[in-house]
Amino acid sequence: MTTKSHKAKAPAKRTKPGSEDRAVIADMVLQGMRSGLSAFKACQAAGVPQSTFSRWVDDDVTLAENYARAREALIEKMANELLEIADTPVGSTDSGATDSGAVQKQRLQVDTRKWLLSKLAPKKYGEKLEVSGDPANPMVERIERIVVKS
Image (cartoon, rainbow, N blue to C red; front, side):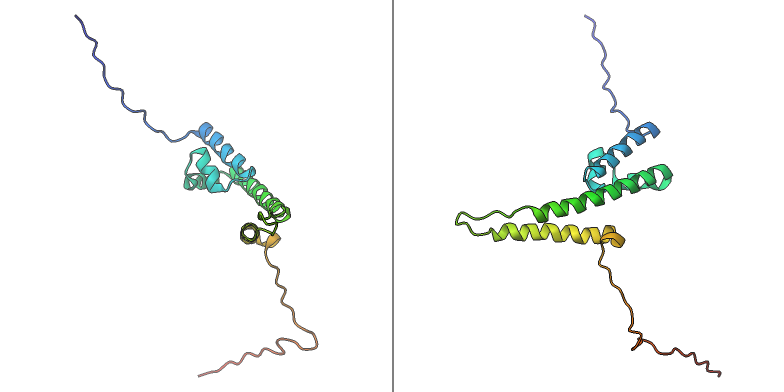
């Protein structure tokens, strides 16, 4: 009786993604962002650490441009989502009264998105503060420089 010798197969080595794999993964991340996922969640869904994806963006000008466009799309989607949440009617309780818990949840969702938008795109969605003086009552009348010799 003859027996065959079976060697246990070594586990496949994990290799760094090549340029083709990198392009496919990067496209998955960008598509996820365009559909409304944060960069972190999109990286998770594509199976790549966010730090690795960020390094790819730093190293590739085209990917950086595509990432910037995907980020803008994500911000616009978030702004549209904010309007949808605000416009959604709030439910009522069994007695017919407005559900205060639902109102609070909706307010929190709107406030969180407003805050995030103000940080991600401050020029577009941030609070605009204008500091100006009254010509009749200027904030500063005169500035003098005094040089003291010792």
